[in-house]
Amino acid sequence: QDMESSSLVSSAERQRRRTLLQEWSDWRKRVEADLASDRAAAGQQVAAAPADDEEAEEVD
Amino acid sequence: MRPILLQGHERSLTQIKYNREGDLLFSVSKDHVVNAWFSHNGERLGTYEGHVGAVWTVDVNSSSTLLVSGSADNTAKLWDVSNGKCLKSWEFNTAVRCVQFSEDDKLVLIVTEPRMGYPATLQIFSVENGTTETVSSEPVYNFHPEGPKITVAAWGALNRYIVAGRENGSVALIDPKSGQCISTNKVHELTLTDLQMSADRTYFITASKDKSAKILETESLEVLKTYTTDTPLNSAAIMPKHQEFVVVGGGQEAMDVTTTSSRQGKFECRFWHKILEEEVGRVRGHFGPINTIAIHPDGRSFASGGEDGYVRVHHFDDDFFTFKFQI
Image (cartoon, rainbow over all chains, first blue to last red; front, side, top):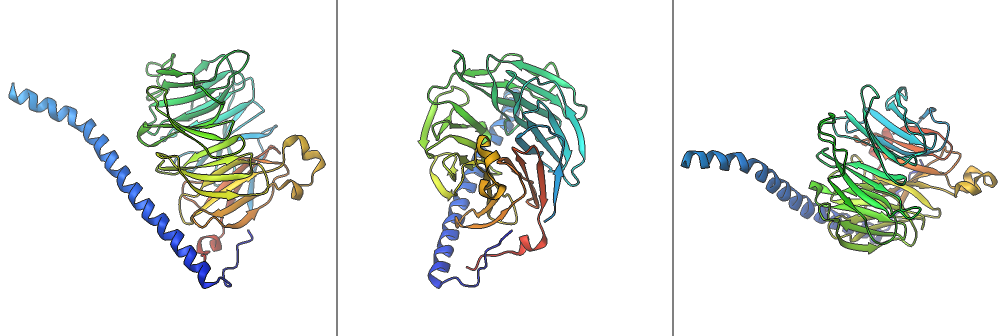
């Protein structure tokens, strides 16, 4: 539980940290958007089957 | 941070796992026993008895109704969590090293060891809701993965991939329908000892005997972060909330422990900032190597299982949640 003291951090180090955090944040946004899209597509496939069947029945 | 000690195993812990809500903690051990505990107070809820060898691996489904365990007795067993009844026992030619429910709980991944002329297998069984009618006796898929021995494995998001960690330090992305290896990346110098997915399974953390842990993107197997320590690692876990931390643990090999003090053995859970790759703290307590680490789904506590036979549950103090790096 020896949490690091963060009082003596150089500006260069703070800049490095900001950059790393921003890069991670950007990557997470991209990956989460891709996954949400994939999940929606997978959900639509499951939901599409009965809807298609209903349409087919109506046509018949 | 006062730990709760769970004393219910007579031999070293091999894996611990929280359920989805985090109210229950399951532990398996070389003593052949699977235990269930209330995570908030360490009271033992029950014991699942039936294995006749070391239990290497355990998982619980998302509704906490089914438990699966894998053992050196060459079986994997499916249990009813609520009453401890064994619903199914699958028999194999060799020891079971890894089990895991798929994201939708419908499938169970089981990895068996190569031994005595039998090849390693990666098998997938259907379990659905765990009723006798829906649990398959035969695997839906049965693959014989080529290459170095698989030591750990996990499902990716939407069951699109299985990620396998190998004895030679490589990770492989495997198609769960064909068994084909889609891609591989040798990310460690020595055996992979643990592989835990992030909450959304888009990335995962590995632990290795090469004294490092790494975060990799699931789809590309690209190494995103590396945490280098001074001791062989047996487990690594990702904190899901509150802090961008990972927790890693390990220590000197069991055969050397008797000649080593707990301090020299480096039996500590080490906290690293996940993104900045800087160590931020350590939690001591075990008297032997840490074999397994799990973090509560709400990120307010974590548990470690050791070669010393204890599970230690730690609830974080308030200052843990307010800790911030200077940015």
